[in-house]
Length: 95
Image (cartoon, rainbow, N blue to C red; front, side):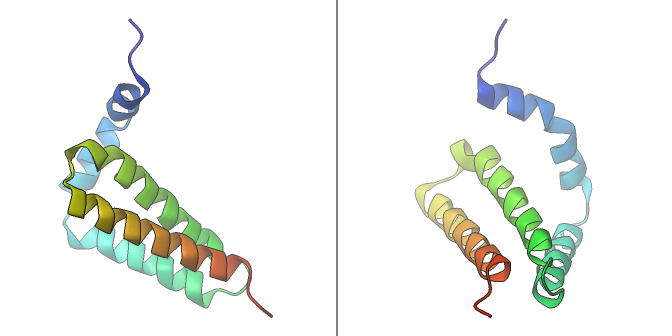
């Protein structure tokens, strides 16, 4: 039986999401905060940490998309675009 792509993604990431859900709520926040700060403070290659945050946010947006209301979808997309913009600014500085 060939499952749709979304079902395969949800099935293959189930254990990761269960572990993430089992963590105290402050732990993922602190990890993301640490990665964003590392991205801002480490010169030249710090954007890689922010890119990791962008990848995580992209995955979470994709994973939760069907269960979200329209305002929640818009807010998640806004956060994603902000993180991507921050990554682009860090990766290609003016000088």
